[in-house]
Length: 271
Length: 243
Image (cartoon, rainbow over all chains, first blue to last red; front, side, top):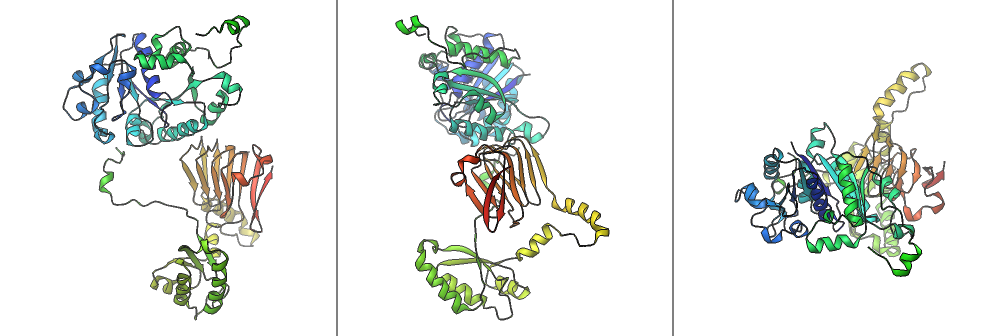
């Protein structure tokens, strides 16, 4: 039985799709059969980040409307075994998704996969609510700035009330906090909120902290999830995040500013 | 499935709302006097008189000769829109309804039903106190009140054990107690009870209100921010005090 995990944030541009791709890749690299679904109908991006945009024929909306089968729409990742992508439609809008259709798709995937990662659209409307509705766990992606934190707070409120688990009243969606674009130097200068402020306001458990990194931009543009770049700080941070998601106890990294050594300052040594 | 699939098919939904409302408390039932005073006010602050909805409070001037229709006409001619009448007896109620206005019970009567004052009989004091507790129907909320959430105690006090985050709103007919940081809006005494307050462990509130008297974050003395405080009403003025 697959675990359904939604990657959501409220605010746009904080790194939901990057994180969904990186985490799904990380899970698959460790032998879990994983599918990542793009719920951002009309603004599809996941296929670009995963580097499979040229192989999209059918999409989630086609499957829901019965125009294609799941097997026709699923794209097998070229780099990682066990990893599949279900892209969103670029030509439709979010009203093309129905709760029944989404449930049907998830039910069909549940037996075959270990993890289903739902990449939520930004906002708190229908699309975002559908992406989170059937989730068992949620990864709330937040940037270290006030508006992002407030939107995440709003999303956490919805996770506690507008999901199937919440409506059944039995258990809660398990909530994880993922802070992205964290720059310890700018935090020290007071330009960014610090880790403790964010966790205090949102009061949920920290799953991971991804440093602001050139590797992320490079990965997006090359269409290779940053998890594959295991020399980079962001790649390692996502690997740590996946470990914690799998229940391992991994110490937090990249949250403190590194003092640059004399030599690296002299030669501008940068990774 | 309650994802509002058939949202397009519903013409409307009923929602509770707390809207700011101007109450025009009449101390004279003489239409000429009201007219004269209104004319003076209009010239002072014309911006206020832009079809502002008002509630006519007739508690002090109720009588058989209350010229409600005439008073409403005067208000309308000065661009005030009477939407309801508060107080008065049966005749005031009936004539309000006849004029197409709503009617609210007088303030005293309502607070009385909300918080029954125990009779001064010591022998029955204890059982009455127990009843009062039940009648108050306060509420205890455990956990974080998040942005966009509204938690209310329509009768009695509200206790939040946790944080109230920015963008959240908590309301109570009675007092509000927050055992944690208060970053959102807190409105106590929403039915007009003035003998209530807001208490919190850490003040960062966007808005504090007791019985309709409010202060925004901007109006709050920065010295008090982050402190444990109480807010209370004294002579129609809102006081914030460190605890």
